[in-house]
Image (cartoon, rainbow, N blue to C red; front, side, top):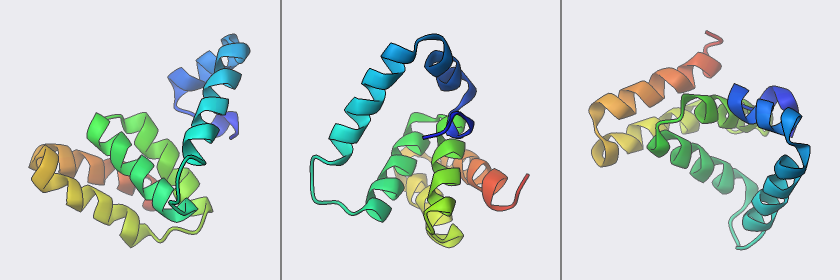
Length: 106
């Protein structure tokens, strides 16, 4: 993953503490490979986790990667819609705006 894909805080850690970032990246790879989910499903789950965590930077990061990987914008927006009954309308709407920051180039 390139530095430009990282939220600013994570990018700073990657730059200032490369050993920590390398270990974290290896953990992420191991977790990604730990089960049968395909790449598209993993990306949607990771986006949903970022939405649930309320992390705008992580949502933006996962959005950029998802679009590069060919996930259609409407599927990504549906993640925010699915969040509404679970985490609430305000949080789901916030997530939708973060998703549209990327899909609509804001």
